[in-house]
Image (tube, rainbow over all chains, first blue to last red; front, side):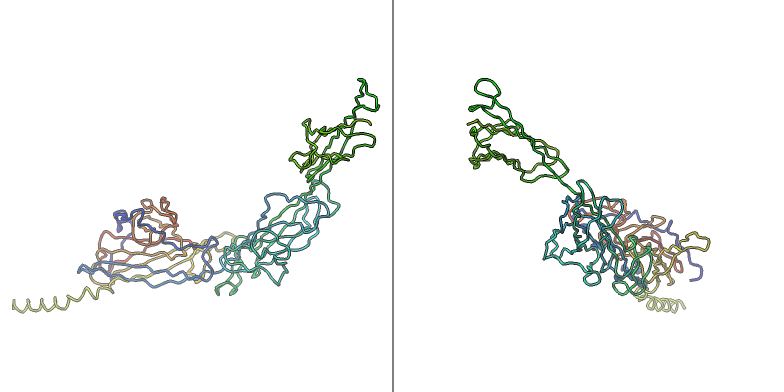
Length: 338
Length: 158
């Protein structure tokens, strides 16, 4: 104990000489799964080193060091991410319009979060009227009216385990005055109930697992925005007539054929769903059977077949289906003057 | 006289022979864990200080110090020191790189660059620091009586 040699690490070890005996199949993952958010709050980290040496008689003596125990405190962290893939299309005056968010506890302990929605963001084109925040109680990612739970701050603040997420819906009413292509921003914020603030702020004794709670890199306060975009579409119809009389002229005489042309032009950023163009056969004329065309192609009069055209005895109709704004459809049909 | 010496000698031998059983107390080992904390100094600069913590948070950088000393009066041969890593700690290396490590719970050993890690899906890839389960120092000379030393490695709270 008086004049012992100090074993210097650089000279004393032969680490590289140990053979690696492992075969690929014998290797097993020895580290137990650790949360993405980090080691769970309240976990004890116990470190014990072990020395072993020859006992001089062929055996091995093993010595344990003192254990050092450190406890993991709770880290307060949260993220909010808009789940909508893009702007959510809405119509003016619509109610219960949904934006979807994902709130994730990225801390390492169980924590409740206070939620709030801000519809009065600046920099967008209009503000929606806030209706409700709804928690996705049945966890299917879709707003189910009457099934999912309406959120009331301070009453049912969602409590999330480490790494756990909840889907949150913010419901809005779209003002009737909103115009085509205008956007509205709605931000959802989540704040840790224990506390938030500058990263590193400590709430002594308030941590999950009995320790302190420490504000993490997110400040334990996060928000993200979703957007509505108003989509309106309109259609304009222009009708014209061409007359061919039996004598090669263009006089409107009995026996003359009138070809009507209907040009439907859609406008706006929206889509007109199940757009059908119909026209009555004028009095004192007779419809020329099987004379309907769409974009120059003949359609049948039957309503039972797959094509768009039909004649019911008094009017022709062409079911165009869903037509986005900015398109044109040209329809013709013929009648003869009685 | 000669006879007496021999007798004395054999008597000493008889007393010494159980010694290997007592040798368990001949090496003292101690473990300390420090955490790096950034401390704001009065001049506004940040200094890194080591503290002995009772509490840490994920991401904290830890320094593990293992001290050993042969407190007996005979050399300890085949001396090695092993530190199994607590599960909540990711290995961050040593300053001199003289250690060998295990990434499979202590079954196989080697320098990290020589080891492979098998993932749960069977995929094999080169082992990473974060895979390390044990750190070990193997001495290629015996630890003489009275000699001592210190081993240091770093880790991060997962």
